[in-house]
Amino acid sequence: MTDTGSDSFTRHLRALLPPQRETDVHSPLVLAYVGDAVFELAVRAYLATHIRASVGELHERARDKVRAAAQAQALADIEGSLTEEERELVRRARNAKAQVPKSASLYEYRYSTAFEALLGHLFLTGRLERLVHLLDLVIPRGETEA
View 1 (spheres, rainbow, N blue to C red):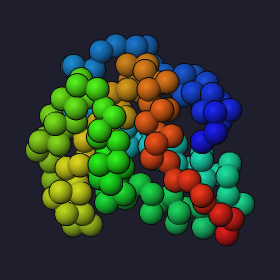
View 2: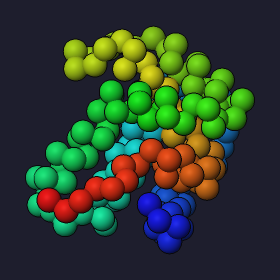
View 3: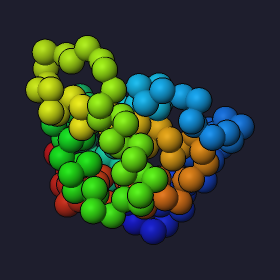
């Protein structure tokens, strides 16, 4: 996302926000549920605005970027830039008990859940500038037209 794109994306996200509240009352899995949708939307919006391709091709590219292995890698890529609060949230989410799907390893699922929980927390607490900053670090660059 470019700076202009980030500003635009932030404005669009702000319009979607529910009333702000702290997320301590939400389990890490609920935060991950929201974060999954936020990341899917961010990836789709990026691809739709930067790639000229059929919907089927856009779907395939998005699917590759949002699968558990890619999200686990995204968390690994940004882990060093997280605040102490964010690291604690990631740790709690990574250790949350959940059914692991057959399409992902235990490691991939736990780390992707932690990544999604972080995004969900930032979204629900209205920390959109931080959310967009982290998305800018992990949203694919260098995509070319199909």
